[in-house]
Image (cartoon, rainbow, N blue to C red; front, side):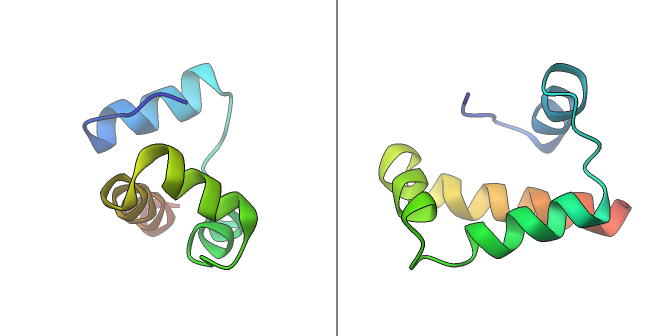
Length: 68
């Protein structure tokens, strides 16, 4: 996974390169995981990319959810 610097860059990559729709179900599912720091997947994400980027990705999923 790349570290993105903007919502537009992140969204474009998710849709065009990862073939995701960023629909309500997907965003809700990802947020449930990313917001639960007790999950090993989330702890690994934070360890790999840092707490600041973790919070940024949560914000981007929330923005995508608001647009869904």
